[in-house]
Length: 454
Image (cartoon, rainbow, N blue to C red):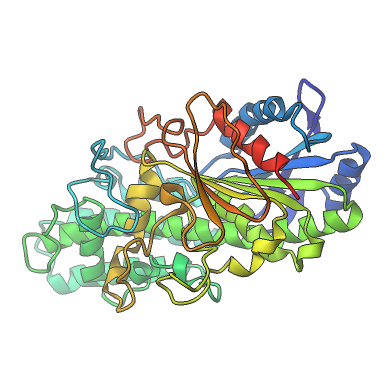
């Protein structure tokens, strides 16, 4: 445990990729929370390929801001803070083509536009070297390394006299290894698994060419077989498939850690000290982690969660949906766990978030061929347009100066348009403003959500 300069306690909770708490010991953490007399505990999870140092910098920046915003608010007692650390994968930066100011497509759009994720600039080895630290299993690390090698050898074979049969065999070898890394899809999470259409395709020759088209590694409209050098497009598409794989593993891992690690810990905390109110916050895939923690709490009366704040969430905007108006025809994976939150459920979104609004749904582009994939926004992300098909639902606007009374009440979903605040895209051609959350108005939002508990 450490402390803010204003003396509030701060704990770092570290989970492994299986959701096991590795530090500190659970009993020691719970004892300290109780001994410190904490009444309102803010728990924040990082997301999108964040190293431990980067996560620490995020928490060091935001916790004092939240403390300042919460001071004096009615309903807020003695504060404590928790930074959640988990092994997320990091795909290396790419020189993407940013969308025009008015050209960012809606999150559910599958239309091909003239954008380029910049994946072709990377070698297979660079991708592998970046992803490997996110795997603890040496066998999986070896598989990632082999995929990188096969991609690079494939690029060397472009334009050679290698036969099409040999080229297709190389794609098969890449795809076989890639599929071995795809995590099993948990039951009922259909709304958040569209990218498996690419990762588990039976036709990597076609699928990888289509991936290259969707991510801009090939000119729009050129992905059909037999036009130009199909193998060059397919190899570039294999790099894009590695990016999609990293999305999929991060999403699955975040869910596993939330459901199997953080959720049960929260229930135990409530059993030990029912007076502690927990305020869950998550950014990007961390938003998925804290959301799925709700599913790891066995009953409403065993939950300490007093508010939920999702900052530019990188998971399906249908996750909390009821069956009505849901294109999947069934309730979202988290719909049954809404009652674990005793206060408001808040999600920010911003049109300037290109990672979620532009590129995230493209990971599911092949699923557009499914007979069910008709509804607009089917594969959209939380951070681009917020909760969908939930009740009661209200919309709010985050002003640039952060001064507002959001009027939050318990048991209500809130979509907060944060485009006036989460808007700095400078130097981020791929992600845009996805991580532009270290700001006073965001801290103020967290504090107001916390103060609105039941």
